Amino acid sequence: AQSVTQPDIHITVSEGASLELRCNYSYGATPYLFWYVQSPGQGLQLLLKYFSGDTLVQGIKGFEAEFKRSQSSFNLRKPSVHWSDAAEYFCAVGALRGKLIFGQGTELSVKP
Amino acid sequence: KAGVTQTPRYLIKTRGQQVTLSCSPISGHRSVSWYQQTPGQGLQFLFEYFSETQRNKGNFPGRFSGRQFSNSRSEMNVSTLELGDSALYLCASSSARSNTGELFFGEGSRLTVL
Image (spheres, each protein chain N blue to C red):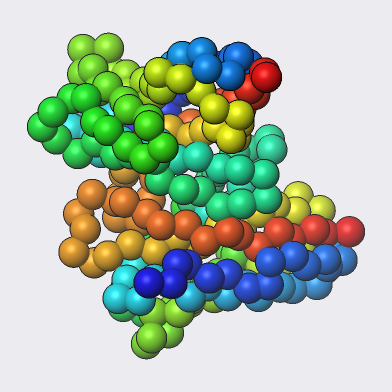
């Protein structure tokens, strides 16, 4: 069955520190992978996506993610976290048209 | 280009009532999907419409229904509300030309059932 696992429910990092959010997926075919961010009371904003080709993808707000087929992972990274990055982050895999399977999310807190 | 617009943003209902939520997709997008977000279950797919036809459906009871109009606007309806239906309902649209499932989300309708 298709699934997405985000092992970390909550992560706290200091402002200026680097960040890595983990995502593992289970999907039979070549996956379409996404990272979304959600601020409190808001909808989901697309950070980046992987469809094919270069396994390191760049997104908005200085985020990047690396697709590793051998590890079934699509981890999100940022070299230097800003206080405004505090939010909930969701990894997702594209299943059918219009249907994404989401992980449970990782809540990011940023210490000043 | 305007984003996905959902109305109302907040609403309170009581058990047994019904509710209708509205979604206007990004101009030119013909696919509209609906998701339910709760703290316990996370983000769950409800259904997807394209050209007024439901193409995909998630595992929700028949109390949850939707439709899409010729202008691609969509509504979802929940009848006989239960306490567990309290959630953030998110609508997302995508381009028909996209085969990759990239979705653009609205800000959601927050439903509270008392």
